[in-house]
Amino acid sequence: MNRPKVAEVLPRGTLQRFGIAGGFNTFLFWIIWEILRSTALLELLNETVIWSISWALSSICAHFVHRIFTFDGRKNVKNTILGALSVYAFGMAGSTLSYDALISMTSAPIRLIFLVNMLCWGLFTWATMRWFVFGYASEEE
Image 1 (tube, rainbow, N blue to C red):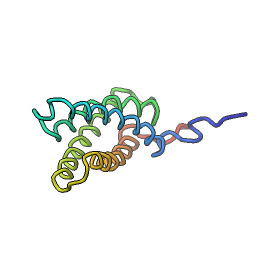
Image 2: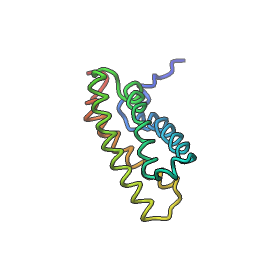
Image 3: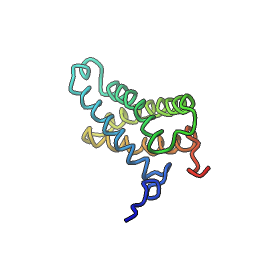
Image 4: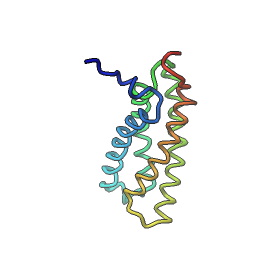
């Protein structure tokens, strides 16, 4: 029985493939966020700073996950990491502002705010990583 290759079922660069890798990256982000929230740092700093620190730490790992699994490694790693960190820096600023705004404007549960915010910024990250960082087209090129 011939099983289809992963690339045939989930082509590189697709939102579906990004979602799988993004799920792993988001899980890592969530673990860091929950750990930091359970320490004295939460009292010393605040929710917004804890969010920013968690985002920054998980972003470096996310670059390599997306380079290996979501897109590909054809472009020079120096270029992709610079582009990815730029995307993640912008995403960190934007997601931190929207996270802080959602905390201030709503009484929704903190983990629901986390989920909604991550989904919205995940779409932004996929699009910018696909077209600007990796310049992804197709595997045949």
